[in-house]
Image (cartoon, rainbow, N blue to C red; front, side, top):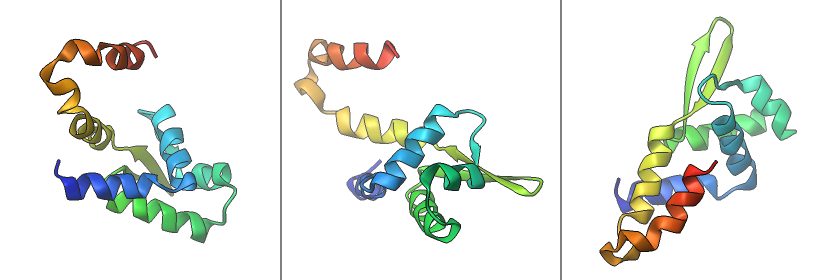
Amino acid sequence: MNTEDALSILSALGHPTRLEAFRLLIRHEPAGLSTGALVDASGLTQSTFSTHLAVMAKAGLVRSEKQGRLHIQRANLDCLRGLMVFLAKDCCQGRPELCEPLLAELTCC
C-alpha cells in the first residue's frame, strides 16, 4: 500500500455514515449484508446511501456480489489489513515490545 491508497481509504472512512456502514459490514463477515439492509441501517434514502457505497467501493473497502436479485456487500478485509499494516509498519522504531499493548487489544476481541 502506498500513501495515496491510504489517503483514499482514510478519506472514505472519514464520513460518519461510511464508517458506520463499514463497521457494520465487518461485524457481518463473512456473510455480508444486502444493500437494502445497509440502507435500512443507515436511515438514508437508497440513492444517498448508494453514493456512500460507491465511495467505499472506489477506495477498495467494499466488494459487491450479486446473489439472485440481491446485491451482497462485504467488507474487504485485505484492504483493512493493508491499511493497518501501512499505519503501523514503522511503529515503535523497530522495537516490537512497544507495540505489544496494541496487539494484545486487537487479539482479545
